[in-house]
Image 1 (cartoon, rainbow over the protein chains, first blue to last red):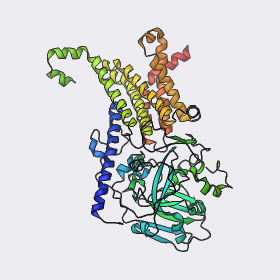
Image 2 (cartoon, rainbow over the protein chains, first blue to last red):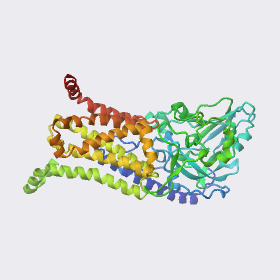
Image 3 (cartoon, each protein chain N blue to C red):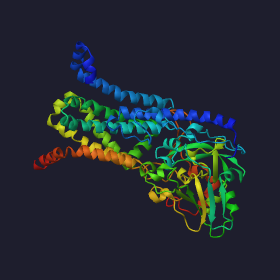
Image 4 (cartoon, one colour):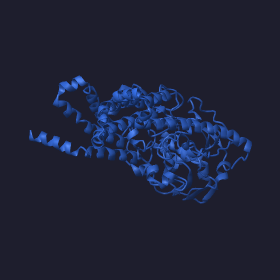
Length: 338
Length: 216
């Protein structure tokens, strides 16, 4: 990996242990709920590795290693309060590791990212491949503090580290037929329990795929993230490399990418295949177009604070990034193309 | 329980037998209340996962469903295993199911939409999965109110008729759960299956009830 220094890694481990204690506590609560309110169904648990009352069985034995990164800081965005790192890394929709938001951090600790191959191919003159080291060394890294708006009407503010997708794309020299970019997550059912079990993976067809129009992909806001909070990505957040498209719902920001392909026609995207009436290809954050089963007009911003954190705020068109991206959609009916 | 009694002295043994139902009820109070209070404490102090609002909503929702199924399992189990004591705590468990359900709704209003009344009403009317959940809760509310002994006596035969609505309520709750998830339908499907099993046990009763009604 980038820096092999045992002294530094031991410091990280203490931090991650902290986090597993945090998670373990939550697991205990969950089980208490099942004992108290659910004695009838106590054997049915949402967690994949729960064994009755054995509180400590769910503590991850292995801890996914993260490494510090060198990057230029984001000084532009100081207005939004950051979501604490412990929350960013323990509240994840990453169905490859389980459908509950607390599943990925438990199930992804043993995830192996070395070796990794990311291929850039399709309608371009110079297709190429990046391995794990290349991901953090080929392009200058910068911090970007972005709002992340989930389609489920909650949001976070996350300090990503990465580089503009445009830089990666231009290097491959796309040709005139490159109208769209198609992304694909790793398909490895042995490592990703959700891909081998329908019960864990929520009935999605894997591998997870996503797509962007070429102008969206080339937009300076569109980020390839290799880290957050100054270190490489945790496995549950999409290590070793993921997409971040801050003006679209979170499911567009595909994780653990192995393939980026220039294509002529609009590529398939996973949630759109699953429920086309609920999740569109564009998936731009839009307070005026509700999800059929819930309102998108407002959202709960997850930062710190318990139940009484008054965190419901109005959702902004394009998640507040309209100035930089609205022009791309001026000829598009955003209600139809949600 | 039996094992304990054997080793206990006679007076205590007598007390236990005499107050068997009371002790059983005490146990149910503790088993239902402790996790609820504890979950709220953790949620208020931001120790219930990254999003305590979602966590407490799910906890109270699934808790209400579990308790409702438990209350419906009591009659068949007490008949099958000749345990009349179970029937004596059925009302208590039903009332706790209602308590969890009310908390579930209150969580949605207070912590999820945060007293945005327009949004609250709109969501209940516009979102079918919330509408059916709300209908289920209204049924449970009417059952909880009429569970008072005095009202039960006054209502006579109508009481049983009203309380048969619990079968509709449990179906609505099962639909509510199934409909609320994004794609992970296995868990709600298992709940649906258990619901159907508990209803099928009463198939005779339900058809007889229907026949009576049509012949009237």
